[in-house]
Length: 74
Image (cartoon, rainbow, N blue to C red; front, side, top):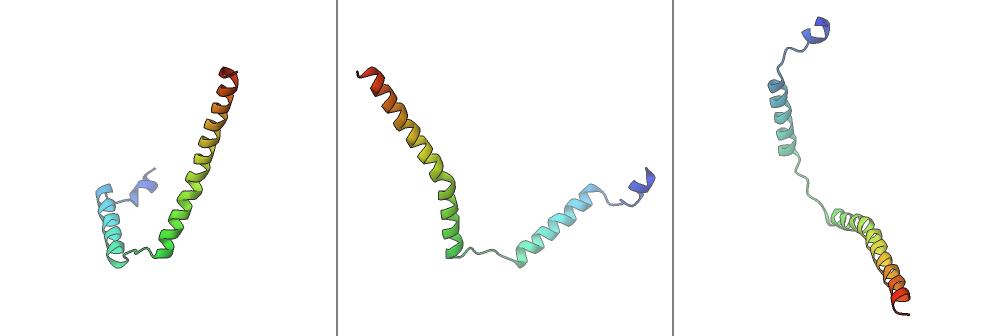
């Protein structure tokens, strides 16, 4: 067991500080600016997720309305 722990001489806080410094360096170096094409792709992807859910909801409401009108409005 001492073989596995002897190599890890840094504390968790040291690792955390090192990782946070790396993240800050990456953020400072590279600012991500979405282009118009990226925005359009995100809008299309959103519609691909939302549109089938809306269609299923509208279809189920239509079928439910049709079912109850056939039963109660005879």
